[in-house]
Length: 480
Image: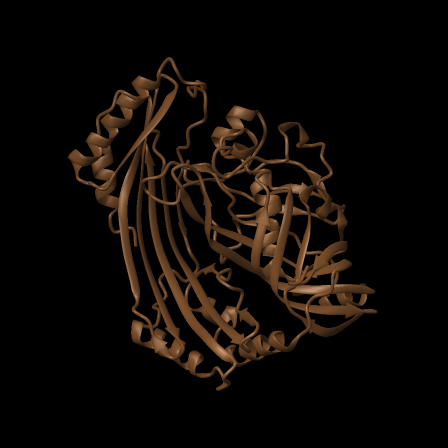
């Protein structure tokens, strides 16, 4: 861990620059993916990547250049390239950044159990093979897969003001999915799809429930195959955490990204229905809605102490009792907008500049158990595990589909239904929040593949949520 830090410090100290501020962000990343499909081990995938981003601030203008050449001369060339770009931009820039604060902190952030020894490749494949072999022999079960992904990231940020920020993080992604087909219809059931990911060691695999889950997941796929279609109409909707994470991501996270609100993402990822004037004014949801940017839950995917611009990260309420308070805006967006944001300037790697990204975006628990949530519903439906999503480029009108549905009548869970879907408008949907589950329903999840930016950046995002009830939502099945 941090094997290259001493050499990086030495080379950074030897760099020569005329800029009033310059920095280096070094990223070393490795990834492996293992999979057993239909009891056959697929070829393992391995990747490694390493490089550095050099950033300068010259006459109030910031520019950057990236390089995979980490020699003294390679870093110096990148630094000089960034300086040349800053000079070219001078006179055409929109912002003078001379007064923007500069970090000077030293700190290490390390994933929980980072030093823990993990099972070797053969043992991991054996675990996946055992789970795959547990899928019952039924001709209707046509496909199944058990998988395990692991990513290691070490990052060091140094600047000429004396900052030294180091991150050592390990991300684990267990997966299991089964597909059933009767020749006329196919239904799939999974262990959270690709949305179960956490920081840590092998305890993540145990926490997600991968071991011993194959029989249950296969049985649920068969139940869906035999189930009737979801009925259409207005019903109360109980969303479990593995669907809430998608709802949070698409209709709270992306709309609140400040660079999107300022128009930066219009050509690619879209805009937002939220306006700068809405902060401190807009009733985004019902009084039960409390949404936090929270980098302090150790196992969540985007927990960190400082963002990639060196800003200290702390828990902040974005929405409290339904009222919109602050955006997902890092230091640059805060400087531009004059609004208080959070430490969420993040980059996907060494050759991308930090931009406003979701990090850990969570809904705070309420006060009702799952049993109480269900008992409070007269005519509704429970949905879990996202399988499809569609939302407009302002992140307002949406339509989402789930793997699993179950009717609720007179406060009791009833029969399973397939192809459960629902639709709504973000600006109204959250105001229909009528009940929030307590900590016993709270689950920490996350996605490894949130895309945004030009050039594109795919990044890890954490979402934790309790189960939640929304009143009178338009639901429909596969025939609607």
